Image 1 (tube, rainbow, N blue to C red):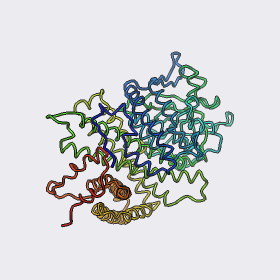
Image 2: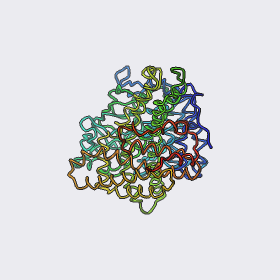
Image 3: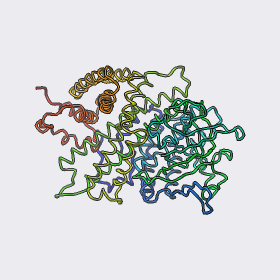
Length: 611
């Protein structure tokens, strides 16, 4: 049987290999990759985990204290739009993109015949966000911009796509998504930015303001605007690529900026004004600001008045990336907590010997396992859809699409909240040290707080879940998936948990039927509770299926995780559980927290006998 991880050997959760220490991520990627893909990826993920745990993690702490700075005007008063980055952030950029974090999922790596699945991008992003969730934002938007150009561009913007997917830093550009306007916010249809075609210059020109522009100086920025005579609301929006540089001068790559030995000259810039950078709570690594378009040159992406539909494709990947980032931040917070508990002594023993701390660490680990399993299962479905599209599949798998429409907003909704809760308690485990800038939990909590906000708040996402159920009838593939998984669970060690999940599944289907017969106002009122309920039932069935497979392979650890998740999320407790005599977390501490393998017979023996 496999041995556990000795967290007491570490001083803190850095200068370690995040891939080697994250056996949960290893398990999930091994499950969702094809066998040959995982064989190729594993040594590269190990190398990336080493890189992130050392150089990138150290640089991230420095960047948090010395973040990007904006020079809107030069000393002569001319528009400058220069964002100055610390050298440590530029090094992180070069290392992460050079490792193929975006490129590998779009263009075949040098020793492969086809690109890796989007799951590979999500796995690398999760590892990156162990060190810096803020940096994860531009990486995710670079992938999102590449996805949009790959899918909708007719070839005119091929140089931008090649630069977005470059492994060579000098040839690289980053992506961004300027979606939010002050008067609109989540109401994208209220956007007021306009676009007119300039016949003389043979380009589109945008006029308006964008209020929350992360990665403000990206060369591969996508923005929505309304063309002349277009209808109101989202139906009238078109998508445009709005470069940082003057598009008539060609693509302004990282290499071009190096040649300037500073910001590019004014005549190399596009006609726009970077008004200011936001003074944010966290995510310092990514500069977020306000942009004024004033007859700014732009290129139409895809068809006119199809911009919102196209942008939703990018939003789907961004929401999934946000969820992977949440998992990465949770993983780092959990690692810091395990190391602290194994090394901090109080009253003559390390604090991980105390029952209350053991319960906390078990449940934090179970939360992380649940979040990671869910996110990478959705990533598997997303990857399959993208691969089929690239291979010109005759018809799209309609059930998979409908399921994704339901699962993606839930992924972002639930994991964003879990990241905040996990980071908050990780700070508490550190004690007073965790509250000050010298310790990483301070930054983890500040960074985590944006994860429920980016790409849609919890309320917005909950309403998206209701729309997926109403318009796409997404409950059909959902129920089929849950039922298939529960039917596959046959091991005696999982019987009680499976029975609980089956009962909750029946209650959930009853709730869906009830909401289908209620008015819109009541459905909206119930939307958030429903979204969390869907997550809990789907994840419980998924973990039970994984536990069944692991038991068949001779390891009962995942069974312990699945049973604890079911207990925490789906079982009703009498007297808050105080009277039931349950000592599960004390018995399961070593296997769950330290990842020691468990004999399946031991798990079966731990099942309480029926009364």
